[in-house]
Every structure is written in structure tokens, then in C-alpha cells.
Amino acid sequence: MKIIFLFLISCISAFSQAQTGKLIYGSTVQKEGRSKEELYLTAKMWFATEFKNSVVQDNETERRLSAEAFFEYQPSSSQSDIRAKGRIKYTVTILVKDGQYEYDITDFRHEPSNHSKGISVGLLTNSEVFPDWKDKQKEVKDKIWKDIKNELSRLVFPVYLSLNEAMNETNVPNGSRNR
Image (cartoon, rainbow, N blue to C red; front, side, top):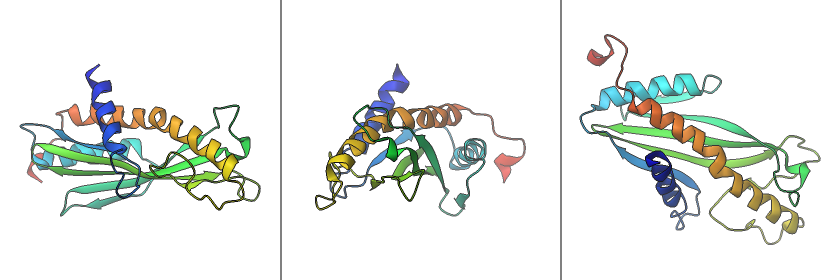
């Protein structure tokens, strides 16, 4: 129950980014007694496990890790358009400090499977509707937009759970604490 509550709090944080319009699921998580090095190595192991097919950007100086990944997207609503089937690409970033880590899951971008006949809504923002009011397919894209936004919490939640579980682990490989 605590995990679900923390995720919901991070979702509220995601939608509080109204100034920039950027859609962000993220939070700062306190880990009292855990060193920056220990949290960094734990995050590195999590990225290596969860993002095997992704390039992980590793900034050792800042203790920041990030990777791009994607979710498969299948329109869930009968009102959504099947031509929107495809992927939702996103970026996960973790910054560690002594006793805490910050994570952001952001930069959600929809791409259809069939690039020539598919419909894309592009970069997802905090807007309730598809933001380009001049688009010829605005009505269809509004439905796709809403469907994707409804699906995002369901898609992001397993990433959050996996990260939370990994960062709760206190086992760091032998010898890596002195690195």
C-alpha cells in the first residue's frame, strides 16, 4: 500500500510541471544511511538489468544515469484509432546523492508502427488534449492522446516498482564500496 501511495505522490508531481508543459513522473526518495556511492552502484545494476537493450548514459562525476526505452502501445479504447498502434519512447534518469536519489521518467514520445499510414501524436505534454489545434486530424488525435495518457500510469508503474525494489536492496557487489 505504501508503494502505491508513493507512486501516486510521484504522479501528482508529474502533473505539477504545468509551467513547462513537460510530462514527468518523478520524485526524490530518501534513503537514510545509504551513501551516494552505494546508491549509485545499485542504480547502475538496476539499469544494467532493466535496460539491457538500451544505451545507458553514465555521468560518474554527477552520479547521474539515464537511458531511453519504450513501451509497446496498443490502443485500449474502442474510441481510439488502431492506426496509432506503436511505441511510446521515454527516458529514465536517476541522480544519486548521499541518503537520497531522484528519478524522472519523462520525454514520452508516441510513434506509430506503420510510419507511412500510422497516426502519431508525438511528444506528450501535460495538456489534456492534443495541443495542435490546427492539425487536420485533431479530433482523432485527441482520442489517441487521451487513451495514451490514460495508459501511461499503468505503463510507468512497473518501472517505478522495479526501481523502488532495486533501490531498497542493500547488497552491493564485493569490492565496489571501495571504488
